Amino acid sequence: MARPPYPPFNAETAVQKVRLAEDAWNSQDPEKVAQAYTLDSQWRNRLEFINGRQEIVTFLTRKWERERDYRLIKELWAFQDNRIAVRFAYEWQDQAGQWFRSHGNENWEFDGDGLMRYRVASINDQPISATDRLFLWPEGPRPGSHIGLSSLGL
Image 1 (cartoon, helix red, strand yellow):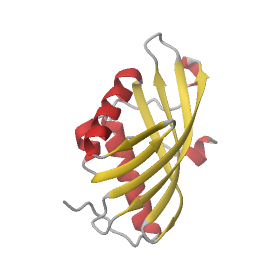
Image 2 (cartoon, one colour; image 1 turned 45 degrees about the vertical axis):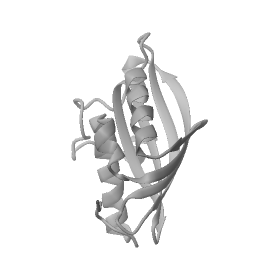
Image 3 (cartoon, helix red, strand yellow; image 1 turned 180 degrees about the horizontal axis):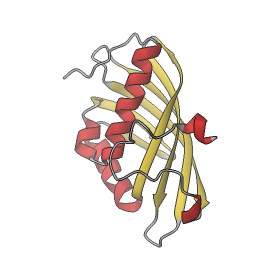
């Protein structure tokens, strides 16, 4: 299975790849998201090491059961050849009703078919009040009219 755009990336295709990833993650569909990764994809996400699509599905299922009302914005930071670096923020609510904004960076490496084979994520969680939320669109992809991280001052 191939997943355009393909490396080597240029400014336009790198931005496109980042937005496609953001939209997929905002679907909160673990099976759909996992299709963008190689069968043997390797991740480091916070303290967890995840290997392969099935572990990705398991991880994302657990993540979105815990992180309710999830809304994510990703922004391109840098790219070269088959690698992309992004920064991101997402808002979510825990089961006790506490809101958080999680900030982080990801480094991605892709194979020739445009599938991500390597992902490293570093993430910090910041408790916020419901009135401090900035990501207020309905569940699903961020609308094209909603501003990004830099415009939000994040």
